[in-house]
Image 1 (cartoon, rainbow, N blue to C red):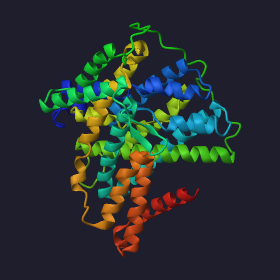
Image 2 (tube, helix red, strand yellow; image 1 turned 90 degrees about the horizontal axis):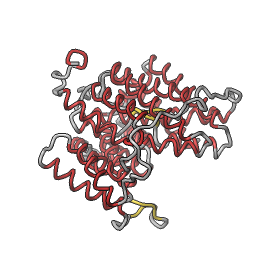
Image 3 (cartoon, rainbow, N blue to C red; image 1 turned 60 degrees about the horizontal axis):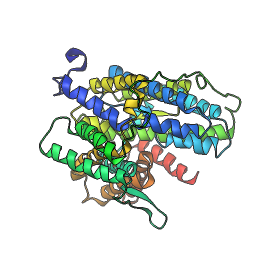
Image 4 (cartoon, rainbow, N blue to C red; image 1 turned 135 degrees about the vertical axis):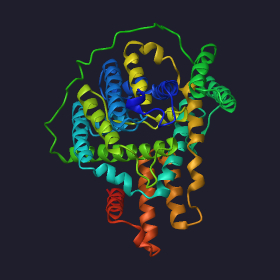
Length: 429
């Protein structure tokens, strides 16, 4: 392990990487319950989708671990699965087989773009201040997700969002977990985020948040038969397919780019020139995950922002991802155990990761308006638009516009102009 992952060179240990990998898994394990629920709305069998979700996450994270050797985990992306079910199937009236075909084609295109270094080039053309802002924005986004999961932040028809009630046991459990985990971090307890999740899960039992109803230790993985290789190529040359494919491509590409930049910044592995080490291999893992996921029967697989939880626990190498992949394998057989952890128990970890990811804000040049406004927009649009991709779009586009109108065109490269033009076109389409 030392030779393959270079643990000493990355200032980490096997124990640290194992704790980080488990922590990452626990903060993203909700996808094993949420993804089947969302895709079942499109008519897909939920039990089969559970297996597809676990296996696709396992394979993609394994590629990230052994090929890219980075501490990032992958799984079917939130938002993309909702677009799959509610926009393509329920909204446009197409079958879930049609939607899976679009995801499969997206994966193939991403593999080609990765080999041509186009996706890596996009990472490198994003200005340094925007990269720092992406890390901060993702932190706010992660914290927002955690607060939503726990019911601390709820829907409000008058103001869009509002404060939930602590009379809600889930919200109260999240607050208790936040205090417990925060105190452990203050005392520098190793694995504080992981211990916080586990303690919160136990505390949630008498509160009625952690449900033990019908609990059993193990269960055989449901069959993939009903959704395996279920493609519909009859409409691949239609305009609707073009729109669906473009949406999957766009959101996945910039969600992944944003996540890689943000988590890499927090991990301290971002190079001096702003590039990510082994970015091509990381993007390849994402592309393979999406392609394999479509074959298995699930929506687009992407790199998870929850990887930041493992990074905060000290994960720095592919060993962290390897442990997370192993956890997805175990989840296939111990799904009742892993699904026992409620969203309210993982919420404190997500909120605290949001706190930790705020640190790059100190390095953003807020004294220069052409840097400050784009950075600010990149930060606030992620949680407000509920999209990492939209944060990048608003940040990079405003950066180019302000530089041009301020007569500072020399700071803008040709490739950045092209990407900004595509973003502007997207606004109108």
